[in-house]
Image 1 (tube, rainbow, N blue to C red):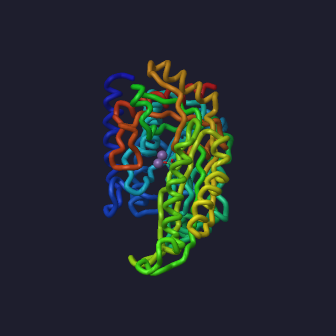
Image 2: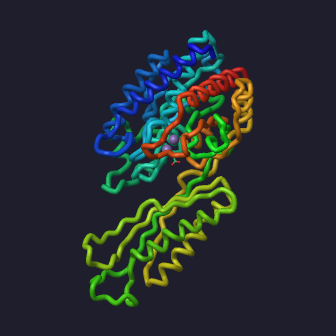
Image 3: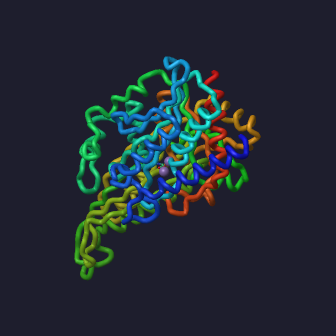
Amino acid sequence: MHPTAVSETAERLDSGIADLAGFRDPDRPGWTREVFSESYRASRDWTMRRMQDAGLEVSVDHAGNIVGRMAGRSSSAPAIVTGSHTDTVDGGGRFDGIVGVLGGIEAARLLRASGATLDRDLLVVDFLGEESNPFGLSCLGSRSAAGELTPGDLDRQDYRGVRLGQAYRDFGLDPDRLTDVPWARRPLHAFVELHIEQGPTLQQRGLPLGVVTAITGIERVIATFTGSADHAGTRAMDDRRDAMVAAAEAVLAVRAEGCGAPTHGVATATRVDSESRSPNVVPSLVRMQSEIRSVDSTWLSGVRGRLSQEIAAKAGEHGVDVEFDWSTDNEIVHAAQSVQDVVASSADALGIPWMPIPSGATHDAVHMASLAPMGMIFIPSKDGKSHCPEEWSETADIALGVDALVQTITTLDGR
Ligand code: HGY
Ligand code: MN
Ligand code: MN
């Protein structure tokens, strides 16, 4: 790309990231903009205007996804889709998902500016609510587009007891039409998502680009420990049924499971809540939330049995009962070899060094993979930090990722 164009792209990316980061929850750390929040609602008008400025025809589908369309010569041909998300985790950063939405918009702008007209429509999508949320369900918008959101999902409740269906309604979306997503019902040619790596590998290897090979599967569990309440001052230590101790043993069992993964696997206890409110009572009811991830299907498929058995045995030693509520947030998904090859050849054509890399994070691409051949392009994350205020990616790396995305879209269009 001509140096002037490079600096204009870099300036637009810089200012876009800064402007979007301004839509944040003032009461939370980092750049928090959680799904259904007021800061998220306010940011969406900005995103729509950004798409319009780039010459895209903008609409919001019944699933709440913001869709920017650049018409191709043949609107009947299967479309190419790119995009990501602009919601964040609590205390999140400025790049996770945002790079894929702003990068997709920039790619469309560059394609238009080059005078190139694609054969196929290009859709740039800001998917609703990709991040895991208090309802325990990630990728709301892409899951709906793929027809994978179920009526039962809408009965999920957050810790205030609010149903997911009500949260959609409060946000202005009709819970009965969430999978009515026409653009996703037409044949689609390919889906490619630009995203930060959210890990340290590319930086450690000194590489500016990753071609994603697979996206991790995620198993989630809420373990509920039931012991017996007692006076913390009078009940002898060898005569307790302490639910907190059983939960603590479970946290360590989760860690041991992740550390024992043979190839690629992680396991994290992310929350422990005790129902006991008084500081002088032996806890009788404690819940532990955990998630386990891997691209190794053999290991991941055995994790429910291994962990349930280990945690139940430890709880039994303390006379504590335990119940498990397991769920699969998403299965392991492999990127289409055809799209991986196009991303790789595009990077080669641009002289951008790259490596194949699995994704330990999940993405909207997981659900889009059921609609079209899927691929992802990674750019480096500074020190591998993500889901925190320190999350950082260099503008030059983002611009390279955009170049690779433009080249990939152009090549896919001709196939
Ligand atoms: O949880 C994830 O991996 C993604 O950031 N939602
Ligand atoms: Mn993300
Ligand atoms: Mn994320």
